[in-house]
Length: 310
Image (cartoon, rainbow, N blue to C red):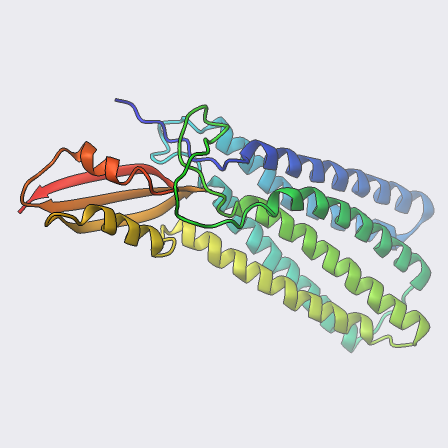
């Protein structure tokens, strides 16, 4: 019997479309700023346009990961499917976020030590326009990101739509979408920080406030990056995703003198867990019977049972 290993998230296609939409909006803004900056001789517009280019590049990591995971979902070379491709992309994006935070922090520190002349009116206009674009992008991505937080270990009944098969799914975090969302939020934070700093500089004469706010923004982005690195690394290294599933497996299998000898639980995709378990028993039953006991545990998409007589 050939088993399918399609462990994509329940909203894989929808999240992919959201990400491409954000990339399109960002790319349009990028082209507009670069063209206008060149025509009008505005360095502020040019700088923000090229910043948008790097932002679009980072978001493309997420979009391409969605496409690759869907295209290769039945590729037999991937032992447990391509459900972790999004986590790998999320990890890469978290590294990019960390670099962005470092760059903003260093640049802000240099500005504190050596203040530069600022064209306040033009810079405020550019920062405000960038913030509007980021808010639109955050709303687009937030519609999918907001559904990624439900938890629970009851009965599962929803099918993975991209796989064309039934199976247990769960709205675990899609770290790929989360990384795209954090990139947009990071850009929004830098825009808000820039606006606050520029307003304070223009109306209060606080030239130092702009780089100080930049440092605070860098710290916030760094914290987001660390959180995303921690969560994606845990998936990539097959860490046990909490103890609830392990406890449920033991509770359902350890009956009538049977005991669990060896147990491994790990995440193979958003909303999909795999389990390999050894049942030590004096009166061996078919492995299918033990798998049936685990059928009601939500999130279990791949179950392997080994029966050992004692």
